[in-house]
Length: 188
Image (cartoon, rainbow, N blue to C red; front, side, top):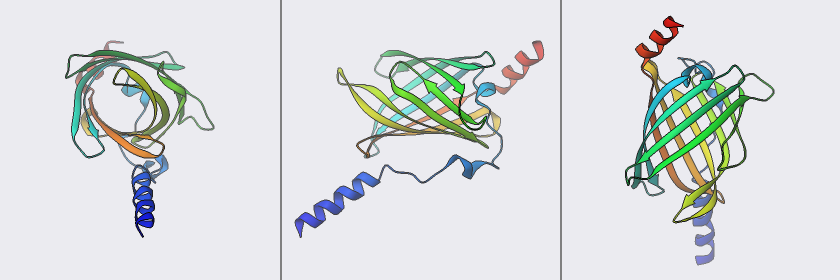
């Protein structure tokens, strides 16, 4: 009896990190997200990291400098964590796949390429990452979802798991100043 309960509890825990969402579900949602347009220039974001029990463990701000050269979208991310830690991550995203909505991303701590797809107002990217934890590194999987909202707000929810077990959720709100972006485009 206890063995069955233990197995059932383990299965529930393992499946709790899974999602059935697909980018295509958002194909008709507006405003349409174009990664190379949204992230071109400066973007600021604010985020929290919650453990699997919903406790906020860390907060951060991140300034992102995006450069689109027509082929590669380079995102230089400068993080400031609430404990004073500074961190920089540089993503390089390219269109790569059977459709123009498919993207491949690389960064130093990713294990292999990150595969993503844009559809409507949504972007989903899945990748393995060599996460720094307590002075060492451990391999985790990210299932990263972004949703473009009106007024230049981009919401990001990423779930982090290991062996299929949900470890944490990262929630980020990106704010692109629409007025500044339009002024820059008009000056070009």
